[in-house]
Length: 392
Image (cartoon, rainbow, N blue to C red; front, side, top):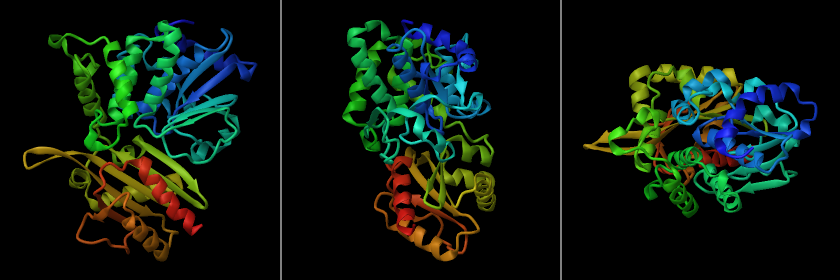
């Protein structure tokens, strides 16, 4: 199979491949992380394409979106990006996690260890391409690329760059647009102030940009991502990603969610493109606290962290900011709650200050302003992980 478009067309046959396969060694599942955000989805599809190019014709590399099919509607940025390159086949051609029981050979993208509820997959992992802190698992994988760049799609783009030197037909304008969009979204449009982009992200974005088929300025249609330059592409995707105000509290919590087991502690972190002040104005503090506690019960967590972020207008200018909610299950006693919150407040990685006048430790949910705006979940999870490991 040569070319990205034939690869996309062949996705429609993956259900039959998965149903009829007799030799699991002939199928490679490329699994994104459980948040199923733009970077994860694009990395999964793009890496599967590049792996497919190196496999025998009787073997298959199948991208697997690590969320339920019905939940893709919570991700309008991902939907728009995919529909812009595969309108005919639409999303029905893709394989989602609820379409199969993963087994056989697995590559992980945008995470380097299976999610807590997918831990049984660890012995099956033979390849990793990721940009998060190394969790020290899946050490038997034959390919283990874990490098701290801004976007996992940058690592996949670098692989594409290398393979395209000898196989230029691998390059495709739609593929370039997918990868570029994911890189820009993950690095806040390569903004140095966000401190998320590395020189490698910039280099790959610069390489991909002229490969995209941009639309003439007078024909711009941002909703369909038909835009004239990379800045407009970022603006369109960022606007779609931030379209969350209509979602219920539960949908906000599960839209971009990851969960881990740290010793006896189950920890879940939700990332929400919605500022806390707006959320409180819409739902009220008490309802938010009740929703988070219900989420803790549903996911069987001991600790839930909710990261709210985005731009709001202040003094006539839009500025980016973050807040952090930390909630505990009823079984976690006051002593542990106080210790964990105190350690989080001490962390220079987060630089937390009370969102309200003071932190009420009698409450099971604490609200903070996070002054270190560049610290995303990539930094928050290692911070809470080290605190819980010290307890364990």
